[in-house]
Length: 461
Ligand SMILES: Cc1cc2nc3c(=O)[nH]c(=O)nc-3n(C[C@H](O)[C@H](O)[C@H](O)COP(=O)(O)OP(=O)(O)OC[C@H]3O[C@@H](n4cnc5c(N)ncnc54)[C@H](O)[C@@H]3O)c2cc1C
Image 1 (cartoon, rainbow, N blue to C red):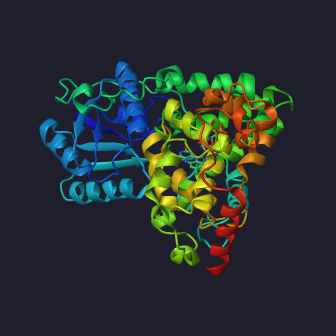
Image 2 (cartoon, rainbow, N blue to C red):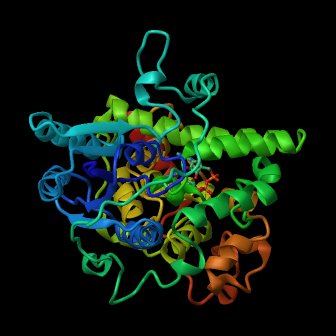
C-alpha cells in the first residue's frame, strides 16, 4: 500500500494551479493539513482572522482539511509520527516567519528520512531568479518590472485529481479556533463585500476582466468607482495564483483586440508591485521594522497617543482621510489612493511612526500582508525602496477635490456630510459656522502648519 503524504497548506488555499498539490497527488493518498502557527508567524490581525475562517471553510468543502494549531515544525513532526507519512509537500513561503518555519521543518525532517517537497506558486517568480545584471536584488521598481515582464511566468495548470488517505488523523474544528469576532461582532458588514475562497476569487477576476479592466488605467485612482479588482485578500491567501491572473489578463487583452491594452498593462504592473514588495521583504527581512533608507533611522517621530486614536477613529476632520478610515473599519479594505493619503497624513501631518500605521492596517485590513503593508508604509514615509520623497506631502483637500470631485466617496462613508455642498465637502470648516455639520469635527491640525513642521523636521535630519 502506498504511504500517505502530508500536503501542508499555507497561503495557497486553492485547488487549481497548485504545483504542490499536483505533485503530492501523484505521490500518494493525501492528508491535507492547515496549521494555525502563531508562534513562528506574526499573529494574524482581526480582519485577516475573519477572512481565514471563511477561506478555510470554503476550501474544506472541496478538500477536507486536518486543522492543527502550534509551531509548524512540531505539528508536522507529530502528524508524520501519527500517520506514517513519508513526505511533506508544500508551497514555498517568502516572509521571514515562513522562511523560519521551513528552516525548522528542514532541520527536523532531514535526519528522519521524511522527504520535503517544496514548490512555487505563491509568486510569479522566485526571488533568486529576478536580479540585476550583477546578481543583486532590485531596489528600484522600473527595472524590476522590466525584468519580470521579460520572464513570463509558468502557465497555470488545472486542478489535479487526488485520493484522500483513509483514515485521516483527527484535528480541531474551525469553531475551536475562534477566528471570528464575537462581542462585539465588528465584522458583520464584511460578508456583503467579500466572498472568501477560490470560487469568490475566480468570480472577482472574471468580473473585473469583463467589466472594469478596459477603464482601469483611467479610473483606478477614483475611490468612488468600483474600478479596481479587489483581488488583494484572495491573492494574499493564495485563493488565486498570480500566474492565473497573469495568464487570464493576457488572454482577455488578446481577445479584446487592443481595447484593454492600457488597462490590462497597468493592472499587471500593479501585480508586479506585489511581487516587488515580496521580493524586497525576502531579501531585506528588516523591512518590517527598520527604515530601508538608513538616514531615516534617527527621524524624530512623535508618539502622540491621543492623535493616533483620533486617526484610528476617523476623527481627523479631513473628510477624505476619515472616509478612508471609516471604509476600512466597515469593509476591511480601503481604496489604494486613499491608503496613500491616510498614511501620509499619519506620518507627515501627525508625525507618528509609520510602524504604528502599519500595525493598525495589519489588524484591520482583510488583505493585510507583511510585505505589501511594510513596503507601502515605507514608500509613503519616504524611507522605503524607490519611495515617494518625504517632501511630497499630500494635501488631503486637494486630493479630495481631484479624485473625488463630487464628494461621492466621502459622503458614502461619512453620512454626516450628506448635505454639505460639493464646494465645501472636502473642507467643511470653510462653511460659515452655523452651516457646518454638527457631528463632524474640525480639522485636528492645520494643513499648512503641519506641512511646514514636517518639512522642517526632514530638513534638520
Ligand atoms: C499604506 C499602504 C498599505 C498597504 N497595505 C497593503 C497590504 O497590507 N496588503 C496588500 O495586498 N496591499 C497593500 N497595499 C497596496 C494596495 O493598496 C492594495 O494592494 C490594493 O488597494 C488592493 O486593491 P485591489 O485588489 O483592488 O488592487 P488592484 O488595483 O486591482 O491591483 C491588483 C493587485 O495588484 C497588487 N497591488 C496593487 N497595488 C499595490 C501596491 N501598491 N503594492 C503592492 N501590491 C499592489 C495587489 O495584489 C492587487 O490585488 C497598501 C498600500 C498602501 C499605500
